[in-house]
Image (cartoon, rainbow, N blue to C red; front, side, top):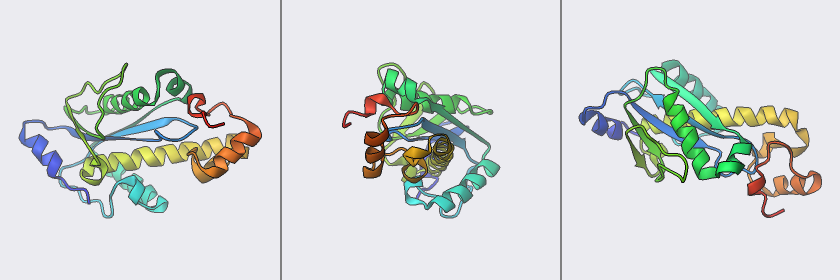
Length: 201
């Protein structure tokens, strides 16, 4: 379960506004990639907070409300599917994460970033930071960011499901499921599909 250990280690080095940062939606065939950054009050307890992939959808929605209500600062950012095709998914993930960090109203002087990559060929995390493999299961701040990114993206994909109902985005959220591929082969891609992800069609 996530703890405050990493945040405390960074604060002991003299940083004060430590945010967690994570992204959601790197793997889908359609839609934006989202990222979130969160600065929480030190020691805040959020029951059942975990990596968003380990939390049921209804619980994620509850946690989203708790995080946004209690965070000292939070921010959500995204990169559109057309830009993902243009700059690739790694650059898009990095860009979205830095945008989220930059969007924090009170500003962060250090970021704990989920994963092991902090730059692509065109974009990099420029805020002082540390990458943390499986950070969303280790750091409370990263776990909170993972919840905001995941819930924000899922809400967006439900909106897209209303715009493009034939693709059943509300079911698979754009991920490469068997059903999604069936619908793609039947109807072809729609405006929010990532063309560079459709190699198997």
